[in-house]
Length: 112
Length: 464
Image (cartoon, rainbow over all chains, first blue to last red; front, side, top):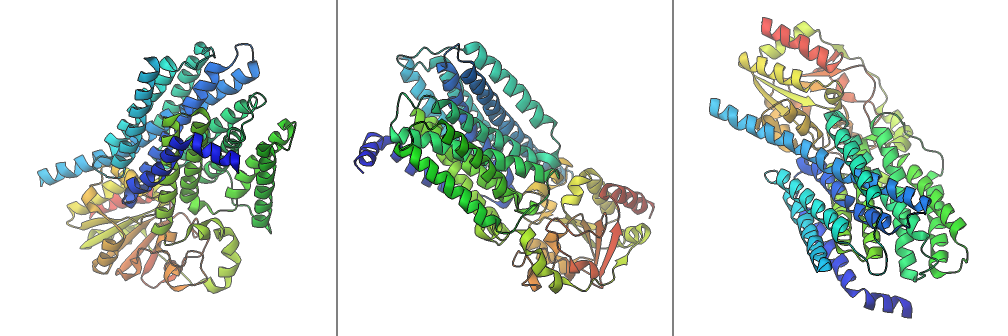
């Protein structure tokens, strides 16, 4: 019990961040139209790729002669980057199509 | 100084994620929101690379980090650019799995450091990150396999109980390690890792393919939490905010998706389609006779109709027939026919899948009807053309309480004068249930690949 209380006391700032972020996350997307569900999921998917920072830290702190850690860290950085880059590019491709769709429609309106 | 700039980078990163997510939830700003989040991510990563210098530890191996970043960027951007529009849901699942794997790998490496630093909460965030990351990784891989058709549904008797037992074992073992009861925890740690991977597989395997979007969204939320665990571990604010934001936004998004199908999350996860099949079998019964319509007749009735509503589904996506579909729409318009598209919120494999696909073929945004306006217009339509959609037009959702999709709002196409259903065969849809719509007196079947059928229809309509 004492350890838990100490832990909360020592990491009070983080706990505030966690709790506020939970509510923020709910608030930010609660009114999303169903058309955007997939792009939003894909965008959120890219954002959690921020885990890559952890992978970079692991790699940077690894001793140069510990090949097991280096190999695991190397893998982690690669897959993390795939998550980030792929996630943002896929989301952009999805949304790009929405945009051309809209442009096409406004063009048609003009033609009519 | 360096640390101050780094903190600023992380602050910018966190704020850009919040603003990015906010902008992503409005159609007009969505694309900019994605770019804003990506820019924030780039700043946070660059800051870590150039400014992160922990006290007392040499920060090096830049050649490895750099080459891994380049390899990952090349693989990620090529995969994301090459993927076909139809396969995007699989791709998202795959990328999510990569994030989960990354979290798991970090935890495995960090576990090696536990011997020097045994703060219980430290160990807890490592183990939690590892378990959640592994579940998310293996689960996403199964979801990927299911969406791409490589893996079929599997369920055995008592699987839910078996899953709960695995989960219980994982939790007990983790608790023992965290409390420090186990002196040499490497072996136990490996068992937890293996069990987590197995749990992810068994968790997703029995869930029907039609529910994969919900599952991917849920796993997405899991990976967010795993990221937050790592953020706690490194005391890194941008990982913490990013992870928790995705965790909570993903959870809400999962619930919103379930609501769009009028089902609860529990119903999706436990009452899987596979298990309910036997129950609805006898009720569906009565394999009535169905009518076929020739291409000629179909082109004729559509060409001379006042109003045609097209209902696209996954079959359209598979056949890559969106461009042909737009062609048909144009040639019908030239004949003076009013053409609309009725888009069910969960048509295709993901919410919004059809919108993306039709937008690719330059179909005008104004011609897409959502569920409720579409249902108001069906009674005034002469012809409804269903292109590879099945479960979203199945009347069993309204009138068969035993059906696994009972309660899902559907497109009430039966109100139209004539319904033409294009399918490759009489095989049931993704949910694996019979569709009574096909046996209604005003329904006619037009078998064949959506693209071939559409191209022939176009030439016939043009010849009218």
